[in-house]
Length: 90
Ligand SMILES: [Cu+2]
Image (cartoon, rainbow, N blue to C red; front, side, top):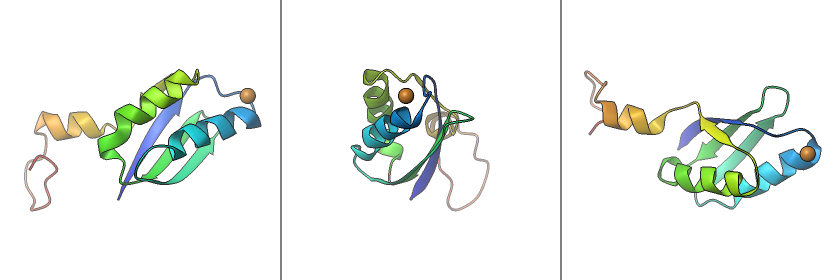
């Protein structure tokens, strides 16, 4: 299970939170969504690393531009892991 942090723009009220939660919960593998309206951050837990793009697409479709602050992709691609048996680059 992974945790992914997103920064979601355009959330202004409780209804926005519900929209965002619903959009994210519709994505395969999502187990938990936590929305922080004040900071515009969303924490997503689940087996979601394969579905981040879908998640972003679903949110943008609903009018909420997204930035991924936990960068799963660059970590996997950059080869920045230097050692360790559970290296994410493998
Ligand atoms: Cu709203």
